[in-house]
Length: 220
Image (cartoon, rainbow, N blue to C red; front, side):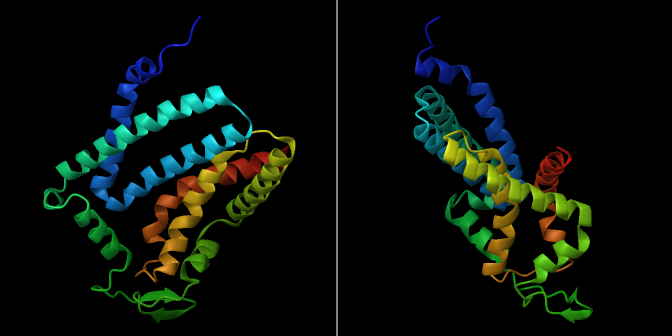
């Protein structure tokens, strides 16, 4: 059978795009930093497109183009959903969220002394190793070992994929980026942090999925 026209196939997927926009918008209405999910989405699409171009998978490039266009519509819809729950941002739909994100990443109005290595320190001036120390102390050792195995396995798999000209596991790379980028940003911005991993509990699902992949590789 002949393939469906590009725009007809795109129109057939509009319900999926609407659901994606609704979910992203509701997430950003709770914390506007949820906009990072949009960045993750387009980063994955770009990486997958470059991989498809490398492997000369041109039908896949066509499919990714459809997904990218649908994702643009979903992103615009998600921004509108966020604004519905944030009336103050209606006056400046781009500037207000940017200002809120900047204030969130460096909130110095409130100072709650936090514990590190047996001493109370200012939450506005935590050392760079505050988050790594708490991840190492509070996460189970077996989880850390499996996560490290997953990272090592991903590096080996990527090297072999480049050598054999096979697809790279970009989904796993996305999970790794989702785990590493938020803490790295907080460290570089010298963000206010307190109560251990309180502000980074959202990373635990991605950490657990990667650890599960590492455990699966170990038992093989």
